[in-house]
Image 1 (cartoon, helix red, strand yellow):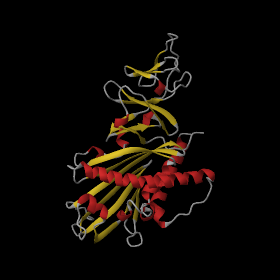
Image 2 (tube, rainbow, N blue to C red; image 1 turned 135 degrees about the vertical axis):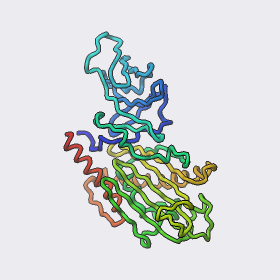
Image 3 (spheres, helix red, strand yellow; image 1 turned 90 degrees about the horizontal axis):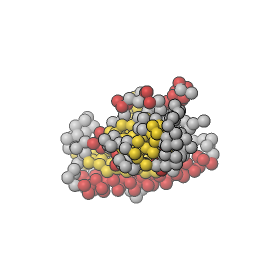
Image 4 (cartoon, one colour; image 1 turned 120 degrees about the horizontal axis):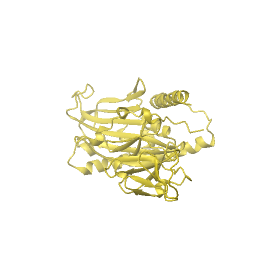
Amino acid sequence: MAAPFLRNCWYVGAWDHEVHRLQLMRRILLGEPVVLYRKSDGKPVALEDRCCHRHAPLSMGRIRGDNVECRYHGLVFEPGGRCVHIPSQQNIPAGACIRSYPVVERDHFLWIWMGDPALADAALIEDFHWLDDPAWRFRGERIHVEGNYLLVVENLCDLSHLPYLHATSLADTAIPENEIPIKVERDGERVRVDRWVLDTAAPPYFRLLAGFAKEERVDRWMNLEFSPPSMVRLDIGAAKAGTGARAGNRASAVTTRNLNAITPETPTTSHYFWAQAQDFALGDPTITDVDFQLVQGAFGEDLEIIKGQQQNIDLNPQAARLNLAADSGGMQARRIVERLIEKERGTHP
């Protein structure tokens, strides 16, 4: 039985710079082998990385024009997945084809639809415009995670672990849970977790990146939004105290966006595409680099914990979990995904 992933939705398959014109790239997505490349006009192609003849990976072959030639016996497949040439015979069987996946390039991501191609609507692609907006500067990467993708989602939706797991990295960005309660809201299939603290000392993070003075008072926030299947976007910022940031006036604010898209590789491993963006100091790339490195170091701490979680889950998948009040955002995100998977599997057994 296929692993229970949500398939009729858009996932990030790669960063745009990872996929090239004359280079075939193999990537396992939702337990399926996929080969990615670009046609002569630069448009991306995503095909099943499995020749229908003897299952050889097409990524081990070569590009012929806009087509892919299997290295094993020379079968050639066009971007739509149909075999167009078999060297050993003239007749091409009707069943000589492989899957072709809808793929859209947007906001520096290559988005792939792993489900029914007839349902692939580009209007459903999540908004990551900060990665392609001249008013923002960003730096991002892909990380291979030794853990289930929903463990990463839960981690991102949980703001309470920052003072503990990230004691030497991002602890000072945390808003004290015992002083300022989080606000969790659900809107359909989206979850929003907000936390604000008003008229407080500027934390070292924003003093370092944005130049706030140590004695300066600020209003600051750490808000996030989850959308299925596994997108988490954080809005983190600070503004001079009393300037109306919470009401929407961010004229004096500095904002960073932590942008995350997690794509399952297998039930126990994931591709983690993330970026850190900011709307200030756009002429100074070192600020972007420092911010990226701070967050990257913290993510290394996260991934170590997630790997340990996955190892324990593998030993006893039925072990009970205790849920705390601070887990509300992550719990709701997981339940949304699980419900959507059940609905999809019930409709398309």
